[in-house]
Image 1: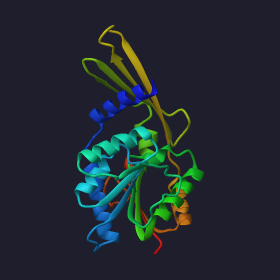
Image 2: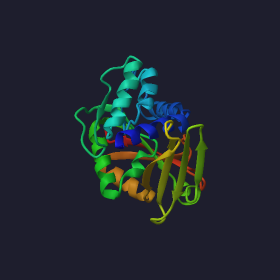
Image 3: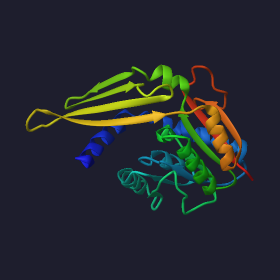
Image 4: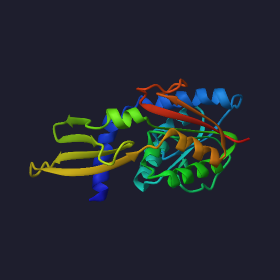
Length: 254
C-alpha cells in the first residue's frame, strides 16, 4: 500500500506543482553566483533534497555540473529516470541532509522548496548546516529557502484547496495546531476503482515548522558561513511584512 500511496500522490504533485518555480530558482542562483562567485566557466552544484530531479535537470540544461540527492528511495529512482531520459547518467543518489557527503568542494549547494522546514528543531538545523559547509569549497555558496512567518501564521492556517478530475478528488487542508511557526498539511486523494466504482482514500500528513531568523543566522555562523544575506520572494530585496518565501544566501568562510 505504501508504494501505491506514493505513486498516487506523485502523480497529483506532477499535475499541480507550479513548474515555473524551477527556472525562478535557477535565475536566483545565477544572480547569486554573479554577485558572490563570478568569473567561473562552469559551476559544480549539489542539489540537496532534490526530489524528482526537476531542478537538477534545469541546472544541467543551463551548463552546470549538477548532482543531487534525496532521502526518499522512490524520489531517487524517479529523479534518476528523469535525468537519464534527458541523457544525464549517475547524477542522483540517496542521501541525508543531516549527514556528511562523500564528495566535497562544490561551488554551490541548494536546498529549495521549503525542504528545511521539515527539520524538527535547532539541533537538526545545526547538523544540516554543518554538513553543507563541509560539502562546499572555501568561498562557496549555500542557498536555501523557507516559509516566512507571515506565510506560516497568516496565510496557511485555515487554508483549503480542492481539485476534481473525472476519476479522482484531491483535498488539501492546513491547520496550525502546534502553535505559531508551525503548520500541518493534511492531504487526501480519493481515487475511483474502475471495477467497483468505489473511491479509495490515500492520505499524507506534512508537518512543517520555522524558527526565529536569529536562530538560522547564529547556526549558520557556527557552521562557518561568514556572510548570510536574507531576501524574499526570488529577489535580493529585504523581506517585508507580507513576504511569503525567504531566501538565505550564505557564503562559506574562505
